[in-house]
Length: 147
Image 1 (cartoon, rainbow, N blue to C red):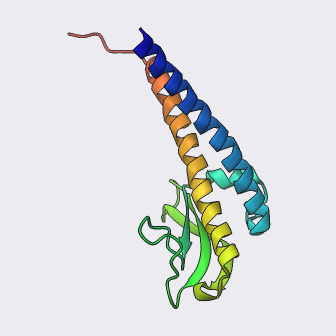
Image 2: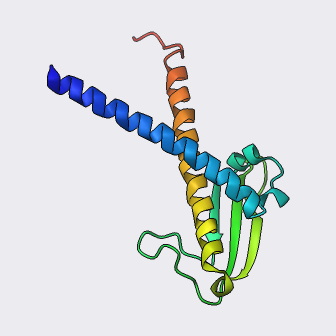
């Protein structure tokens, strides 16, 4: 019994930790939204999460080389919208442009990376909630009679 109770306590602590991290992350992303002037392209902060993805050109987001500069490239935050009705389904929108990647200062680079990774962190929670809600809806779908 103690083992089950310990597992429940650990799970509860982990969920609380994720929720606290999510709350802090969202606050940071909103601060960077202002600091990086993303509001010039996306007027309302909540509209950021309508993007299918947000990517970065000119600076690596890879595990092995996070923050590495891609020489000769331009640093730019790019939002990707999906439009199922359009001929071209994905539309790339420049959310912020910072010039040649090698000229971006260390603090600015860190802010850009933090913004994108933080956005992705929050987006993953929203995607999880979306699919959790869909799974709940599927339980209410009518079933065909078995033959």
